Length: 104
Image 1 (cartoon, rainbow, N blue to C red):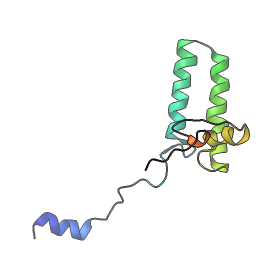
Image 2 (image 1 turned 135 degrees about the vertical axis):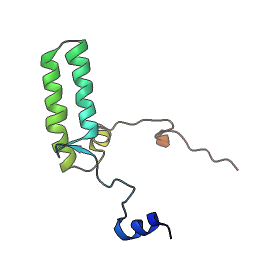
Image 3 (image 1 turned 90 degrees about the vertical axis):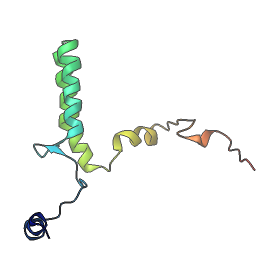
């Protein structure tokens, strides 16, 4: 055995290669929330210079968004409108609207 192998077996610890929890900033915001906040600042704070709209959107996405994400299951923002407003996407994503054809 080489010296590196001896040191590795004696002092090393195994590290899992997967991340089982989302990356958070200040233990409150997920990384996606932070990027949404930066995008809102870029669009409404720099390009359109609309401070009122920027503050309202930041408070919704960075204030209420993480609270809703913790209370409800993952995907609530995507699935809630479809369940409550009877929305449908016919086509490749939701082929329920078309008659199904089976080939032999």
